[in-house]
Image 1 (spheres, rainbow, N blue to C red):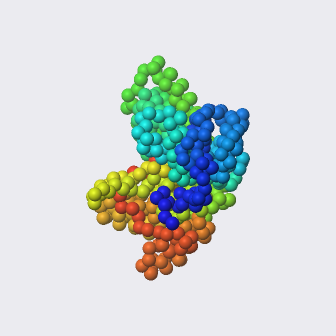
Image 2 (spheres, helix red, strand yellow):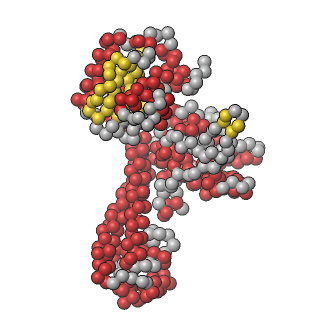
Image 3 (cartoon, rainbow, N blue to C red):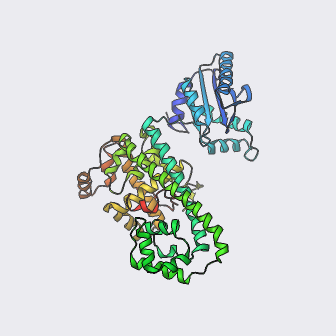
Length: 465
């Protein structure tokens, strides 16, 4: 039997079919940072317990449990379904506590809650009680996805990936501030180096010798010796370039450079601390990866530890998705569809309704495979030759790489280059062949204008990963 909202609704409705709606209860919970609001209603929509607040503590959980027990006893309930709005990370501890208590709990997408409130003409009249009412409507319809359950290795992987991504983002913002300080202290210094702040000799100069007056006095030989004494080799042509930049630099008076020099030193110390944290996170992910399903992806050309870890953390347990297409929809990379009265809008972009982390992971996966695997390189060039914008080609490669990676996660079979080549010789779609390992349906890449997510790799790691 087919249901409007798909398989999850069908499974829920099969459980409650024939039951008295008054004995089927829903409990929507709107979670905040430290306080949550809930109500209890039956499947007729009748409110049994009016909206009430409780603290997100063990004491508050006892208040919620008492309300559930009271409603269960009053209605002799047969089914009790709790729905929690997925609010960043605030909901996770409550969901874990509810599951530990043996209660059925599902997560509700905040966008779905907002749309449900809009159906009641309350889109711009938001408060926690109205959100609970909208969530109750969704729960009665059978909407909601079971929360993801990760084992210890997957949970650690997800935590380290998120930690590293935050530190890379913070370091990127800090790098912009350092560039701004150098524009005041030593204009033209960073222009002598082609890889941002990654060059070892540039890092020595920023940390220990950012003053152009001192560089002019040292001269070329003095700069080379100064950098060498700190364990870094600097070529003479590069030193000549730096000294020439110091000689022509427009700089502030010495009295106005003192405070920017102090600020630069503090910013650089923080930059290096973030560097160490990123390296520690990378080392932890390297150690964890073989113990997770995503470790199998290291056999794919162009997929390194960081790309495989990010993809594995975003997918989690691949069995929670029906197939690769369902996982791709969950990333929000699917094209927006708008059809009415026999007409359809074209070039409408991507939905962006789904997991940001999964969206980034798929784009990074496509970027890596598309730069190192000859067949994916050819595929990307063919798309660009057909007039596709580079962004569209990148997402299309990511889509194909995702289907390959998802099949490997499901089957836990390594990438078989010979089997891949035989598939090419037989004029079959290569991902079709690999997907047979995991019994995963595969379709062609989407042809649309997609915007890729921002890469979470540092510049120095792009070539090595």
